[in-house]
Amino acid sequence: MEEVIHARGHENVSAEHPSTFEVTTDDYLTPAGDCILAIRADRAPADFDPEFVAACRNADATITVTIEADGHSDSVTGRGDPDLEFTNERSAVGRTSDYVDDRTIMTGAEFAAEGFDRDLVDALADGGEATVTITVE
Image 1 (cartoon, rainbow, N blue to C red):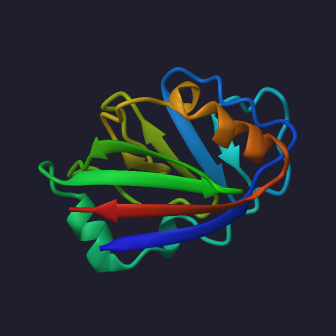
Image 2 (image 1 turned 180 degrees about the vertical axis):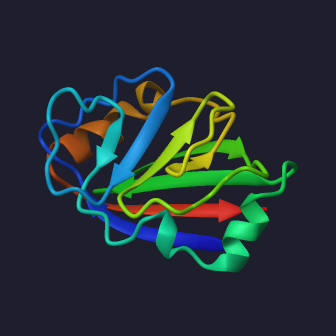
């Protein structure tokens, strides 16, 4: 199963955060938002299909987030958690930790914002259109 979010980069995308990455529906990004990879997302976790959400709530689930922009792509894999809510209407956050809140879409991610391919980050910083595909197995 998968969910797809369309968003876009922003000149302030730095992707320097060591423990999280985020895609938001917000239409702005300050330099302090060093975990945010894309803004103006057309969907948020609250919009995801209930069957997809249920699959992600399995502790044995493998969740993969793939971000593509301007011919560059990178994927990060993490896991599901029974406490995942998928109720946030603004932001989707992947975490390297086990922390869960209403924005969390995966825990135990292999890496956070700082680990994404730098060519992809540059494309996002240039304002490129982004496709974020979230799959669960």
